[in-house]
Length: 396
Image (tube, rainbow, N blue to C red; front, side):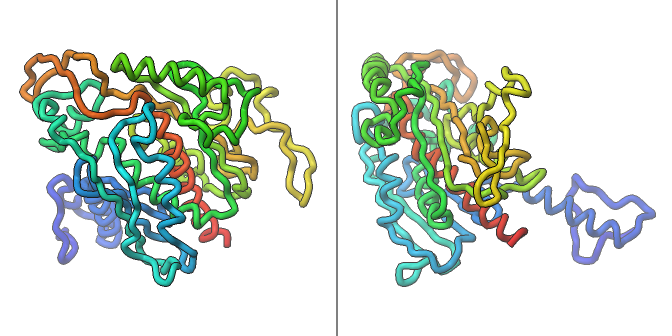
């Protein structure tokens, strides 16, 4: 049987077996060919209805995001997005990288007379303090713990200046996009904070939300923040680094966001958080601790509540059951690995496979998880905005 008119079969697909019903073959071929084409594309876009694409590199002239699917008629201004970028901005204290970037966002499209038009919103952040010369040695060898080797192996070459797209610098674009997402979900409040640095955790009894913005660690425990000053200072002065855990809570999420089975809210949140550079683990609700509970302990018992909604005695599930929000706070935790760039010479290999030793230069965070808190908030907002619109599209 001949192929459908005007259609060229890719080599891997081959010819349709004969005999075969033409009406069945063409849809099958279309699906497989489309899937094959999609698999060859670069994946820099996240979301289904409320989508965003980030662009730019650590040492390029600028980076940014294009947000598509935003509701029209929402009040928008650069001043509404800038505070979130200011929270993430580098160089604000000795506990973060000393790269000095103002991170001023510019809205290039998608707005008119101070409102969203429903068309793509382009956001740009200029890079102003690159020092590419610090990475001359990195061009020849791979930094342990970084994505240098895998980018080279996958693409055949790489942007070695600060890691290019694999740099945490890319997350500035996410934070800008997250600022737009918050306009879509005004009923939701999102707060992220650091609960642990280098194995030293906060005391939940000392939790004070007002402290999160009162210290350089986004820490809700003033006593822990004081301890962390010494801990992070010691790592910075020795040229080492520390990991961190960030917790994020979204309140005001109504019941019903999320869809079974492959559009689960918690699955999309996990994917969003794992896409953040340096993240190595995500927990929803009690997470791994739930595996150590009995069924009785883990159950979020329901009782009659107000306005026809149930009252939950607990929130072990983190506000999500069956992939759908319960109306309780959505709670997750994100584990950031220690910054891979340290000032200790490390054994590695060159691009041609020769053994060598590499001492990485440049300006880096002694604990990348600290500035990860605003990024986690942004990704929470982006996922929730998408799921709000998905829910509205299916259920009205």
